[in-house]
Image (cartoon, rainbow, N blue to C red):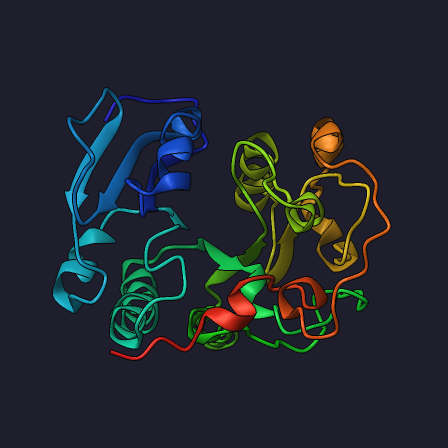
Length: 271
C-alpha cells in the first residue's frame, strides 16, 4: 500500500448497513486508507477506499478473519432495539465476545463500542448520572449493552485493549418527543465523538454519554473529559416543535418517568 497521511491503515465499521452505519460510511473515509465495512448484507458496491466483508457476528471463525489487518474498530453492529432474546443473544452477547476475542488476537489497539442509554434506562429522569453511576438496564437489549461494556472492561484490564463505550442517546435527524430533546445526539456530534474516541492518545476504558449540547441533560460527561469532546449542535434547534406546557406525567406513565422512555414497558419479548 502506498504511503498515506491518513491516521489509520484500516478501520472496521460493523453494522455498516444500519441507520447510523450508513451515516458514518459517508463521513469517516478521511480517517483511514481503507474502511472495511461489515454487515449481514445491504452494502452495495465498494467505493474507493472501501472493503466490504459480509459477516455474521455470531460466527467465530468469520469474525477472526474479519479482524485481520484492522487497526481500530467502530462497533455499530448487532441488534439495536428490544426484540426476542435469541437474536439479542447471538448478535449482542456471542457476537461481542467474538469481536473482542478476534480483536485481541489480531492486535487491534482500540474499539469504539456503540453502547446505549438503555444500559441505564431504569434510572428516573430526576437522577443525574455520570460514568460511575450503576447500570440499570430497561430491557434485555439494555442488558446486552451492559454485557458489552463489562466485557470491554475485562479486555482492557486483562489485555490492554482500549475501548470507549458510547451510551448513544437519540441519534436521528430530529427529535420526535420531549424525551428525545434531552437525549438528542446530532449526527455531526456523533462523528465528532467518534473522532475524539479514536484520536485521543490514551483512553483506557472510558464510558461517555452520546449527547449533543442540549438545554436539559440527565448525563454528566466530566469523567470522559480527557476525550476533548465538545458538542457543537443542540436540540434547541428543534425547540419550536415542542412548545412549553404544564402537563405532569401520570404516576403510572413509566415512559415519562424513567430515562429509558418506551423501552421501559416494551420487554421482555418472548419467542
